[in-house]
Length: 262
Image (tube, rainbow, N blue to C red; front, side):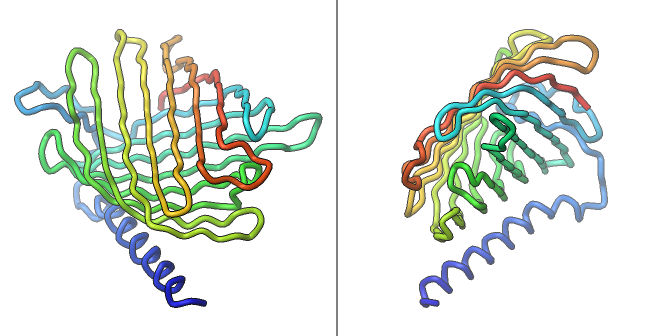
């Protein structure tokens, strides 16, 4: 093993340990009054914060194009909690698809993000992300990043967040090739509360590494049905600048899901 490879792997381990430490730091607090964090500009009124774990479970139908064309089961678990200035997010996404009885897509994506708000509009964060999709060329891919974020505005039911981070990404491809590189990651998150029962959101992230640039954009519209149930229509676009031969650089997913609020 070359010295440069040993250095990269050691750096990945150190960065992952640092990110995991920041992610787990809130769990060491003596107080566990979990609440939803909604940062606002200085001087703005803060909404009443609900205590306890909050999140959603969704199951739906998904149609995909790109490297794989199929009909799929789309399931997601999204949880948030808040303790003082700390916010934690757990997001797990599972997609299983088949055509004529043969599995032709299988995606598992899990992410844990922790952030600490040192002012009402500014925060630092750490992110750990795991991705696996052999049909898009990845046996598995791990990402660890830390960075700074800011809530740019939160007015009239609309809010916009921006963040920038640096980290490392380690990928193992289906052809056994290994890619490890430092990355720079930028992200934007927009949410518009259309009324009391529905909202529109847009999320965009771009991670640039030595070997490739990976981008993801997710657009969704959610409307309340009854009780704890809602329906969501979403469109996801994923783009990778460097893929294995025979695979498309861009994949798209359109999903209609039934959401249950916990």
